[in-house]
Image (cartoon, rainbow, N blue to C red; front, top):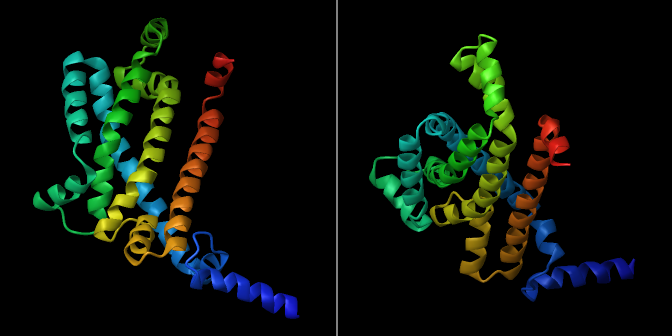
Length: 233
């Protein structure tokens, strides 16, 4: 019994010592950390999904026209160079209401360059003889796109989604400066109050989240594109 009490007091003392590694912090703030984690995941998926909704039709058009590709890529590149600390105020200036949507839209803009490039590469990588065969079978341009081109371009598209997701997980933390940053809220609060355990724990959770999502998306990519894995082997 005395050993248990001693172990508990040692664990609790890490809070008093403001230790970087502190199990007592995780135990006593688990509900706050879980809430921040859920918000982080929601913001990440929302941004990547919105980016994909915009990039997919744009990528299809860009794969058909060099002019569209050049214009879209140039715009996406310029937008990507805008610092995140400036992006969110700019979105407020153009009329977007203050809230989580600011972070989602801002981060979606950053995903456009990655997603657009991979969509174009994937679609242009579809073999010409495959396209000719689909056309010879009487498929319309729309049917050929959905039944042939997009499925064959899926490995490249999903690879872009993986990259965009991992980068977005990191960028979500910047939203903490505006109060909508998931785990970034905890990192910023910890820095402001010099609470070492909060900073390190939240940072470690961001890294682990990025690795977990990357692994899950890789498994999804291999599951839905088995032909690509066999071709690579």
